[in-house]
Image (cartoon, rainbow, N blue to C red):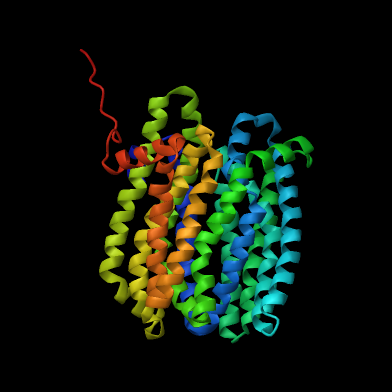
Length: 436
């Protein structure tokens, strides 16, 4: 935590600590229950569960409407209108969720008309989309650097759902009950967040057509880029499921799950850094750019250390955590852990994109990435199977995060800032000498 204080600053260190505690708690529960679940279900059923989750993830991005990238700025700039802004966002997200569930039902019924299990799993998972709209409250707490309340809510929800999953494992429950777990967790979390919000704000629900329209219009580019991001991140599992089989999705998902375990640290820093960096832009360009480079440098070098560790011990990790039946995931894990660095850098770059007002370019980055990912996945999966899909993801992620922004004059700077951060150029502030 002291490292984060020195690199990023004291102002939001406490908020970051709460976010870290949340991620650590979720990590511990996820490891215990997630590994047990993967072992119990086996690669095939675990693959079905993750195949369905990939489809739901695509629609969850649609339902988020890209608001997570702009709503914090609205909260920061309009503190007296926060209640109206918040519930306007929740309502439009709920409407989108209902429409998405209907579309999912139609799509799944057409594509998997002869597979009742896959249909049931996906429909049960899709119900979480309605309750996910309430996690918009999380961004309000982030904007005032009080994420401890969200941490408490998430911890309670995750603990209860983990107990639910343990019961399912002990009782040898069917796959459909496991599919319902994500919906139950979203429902519990949403209810708790609402209760905490109203206790902190003695106010009535207020909705504004003006803010609803503004939020959608300002997040328009992020909606499109979000869809492309979802295609980009979930394409590998969907293509594996259709080109090879659901068992390959199970193996790949194990590798992917381990590859993102370390995300809790950089994501906590990114979430806490966002409102501070946005405010710095208003005061000093040099401080603003330095904070961005500090954030990039932290993510990159911390990621390199994590990736080196996983590269050395991937076989041991897979064998002792998931068992011999998942050993095929060892090599994809090595590839995906390096890919995760560029994924997180792309997430951090969104702060720069919002601040500079170049939102429209994000869709072009991911359009390039989706095309590259699809082409590479199609070629490499047929040649190398699960390993080929991981390799395709790594190359496509590098293209999207580093290469694509350099193709546009107005966004070249973001890659330059990243490269300077990798080299630690003006990242560590020099101590000013005090004249005696």
